[in-house]
Image (cartoon, rainbow, N blue to C red; front, side, top):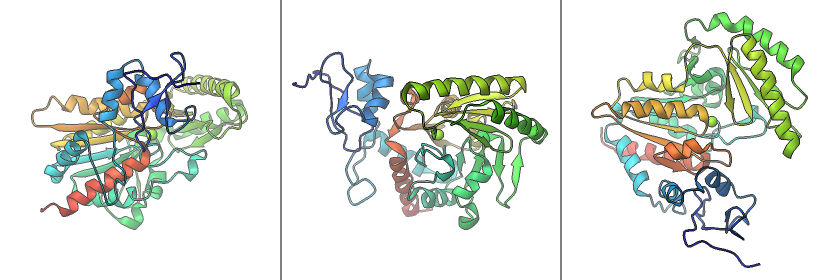
Length: 351
Ligand SMILES: [Mg+2]
């Protein structure tokens, strides 16, 4: 069978080799020439969001890291990449850098307890925290989990670990700071956890985060339609039980989170963090990060304020994240390299 190629064939945004796409017929999905099609993560992320728009795909391509050996001997940057690095390097003491954890600086893994930052990202974040006005990891994870994985006690840098989408933060002295009113929700979380454990089907995992709960099904043994059914059932149960206790449900990647309704999210956090800044960047990969993106959008109207919204791709990245990004990085490894390059620039910058 010969390959059918469109004169406007797009290029995958996620493949490290940055290969052209092809499809075997007008009715089959685009597939990467290097990934033999069906398992290509780049295709999955691009086609879902942008295959209907060739211009959109070109836009994604132009916003992606490219250049072999990036972070090594040879580094070739696109215009967007160069502009982003220059923006954040201009006046680091007036610049902020914020990022999500899972899927952004740490690969998504089957067992969420085993998640760790990619090599290089950790040291870069701590170094950036010493050289920029504010650097923060803003995640749905608990702040205690972030403090451990970010090795705050070892590095002792000003890097901020903000958990539960902004409900709590691990303070430098090693204590947990809570938003007003949050502590009163702990008994409710315990009750909800017990109900979920009794009601949820086998194969899902209930993570008690202290002042929030996440139900995961990534590690379930079910596949295909069975996994879809499991996800639907689990989502319904979590939504119903959470609502009966007044908790908010937030959909994530192969998971649903429940949190107290205190009006705090990543958008609120980014708004607070940007107050004393002239520029900021946010790196994210999931729907909760859109709120951070939109907070940055609001700052764009502030005279003199500049910002960059950076989407880190995977096979599961929501299309909205690609649509709204100023820059697209191909997975946590590229995000780690981005942080390392920025950190290196600031190290060499005078003052
Ligand atoms: Mg994430």
